[in-house]
Length: 413
Ligand code: AFD
Ligand code: MN
Ligand code: MN
Image 1 (cartoon, helix red, strand yellow):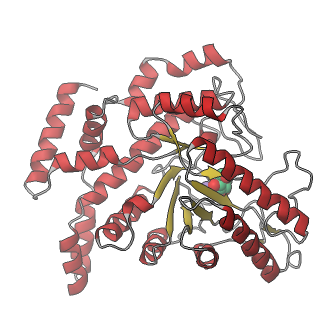
Image 2 (cartoon, protein in one colour):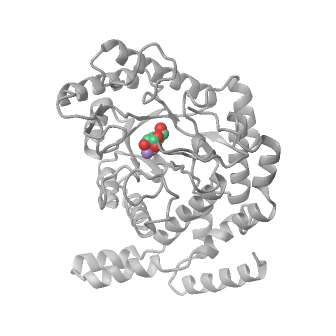
Image 3 (tube, helix red, strand yellow):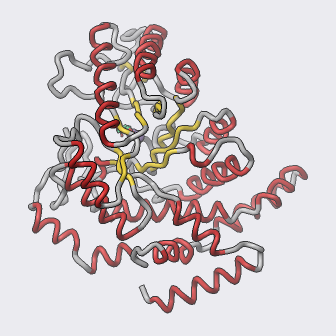
């Protein structure tokens, strides 16, 4: 990136924004402060049930995953936390892992439990976990979540994300109400043991891996359960966990209205839980979600700092680190654009029924090229002006392959 080009584009944009009474310096500091956690499982090539294509140089263990996130943090200055998945990321020595992470400027975001696979535990989760009709399986799944909390406590995490694959594939297979009741009772046991400075992020998903029903299929069911657990249980919105054309920005507004938004798993999709790079398919939707977040926080619906931000994407085709560089950029751009919305004018248009005017307010912000702001935030924080160019110019993937091997498999199941 030509620094002179950046200086000129940043100064021109600052002037344009200044003419609207917007201080570029303030935007830059808000963008710099906005950090997004990276999931440990996104650092290796993803896969589908139709196969997985290794990228080479993937992390082989938790320490190497932390190194990759440390690199992302150094280049982009947009991430300072990792979200672990247990049992994929069981630390052999928690203190050593914590020290390694601290040396890289990485903290531990919410922990993710896993009762959607069998990994040698005594009782199978094939017919469900927290919702299983066998109380012994439910007890085992509760115990697993408590173990995940214990590991999280040793690392300094303050959150437990629960996503359940529980559901059924055929009509008649499950008892809808009993499955929901057992799930709620099991979550109550987990919640009761959770430290008082932790929060439970309850994730919903309409289908997959079960294709007839999922016990927690939507934001409403998650909210109903959270209400029965307590005020530190809130709803986690994974962008890919909605049926096509769902109005996600409305869900975000509704949850904030009840102070029930736990946070996000950012990704993008065309059809289902495709786990594509955030912002690669529906950037306008991502912008509209940030409009609700910024408006909701500004109007006191829910505090910005009470919301967790994390990417949850992983797929077969991109270099995982390049994918994450693009995702972090897209999230920062959507956030920056949403900060430009003239909310006073928007409210006036809404009150006056000026539909065209309201769209103009949103489009004015969305169509502003905010890359100079995001780049300035990166540079001022000591990051690279153009992280992707740097990553390729310095042949970082090639050096990871040389160090870790061509077909290293990310640790995980
Ligand atoms: C899968 C699920 C869900 C969960 C993630 C990590 O769909 O998004 O958050 O695995 O457990 O992507
Ligand atoms: Mn998710
Ligand atoms: Mn998912």
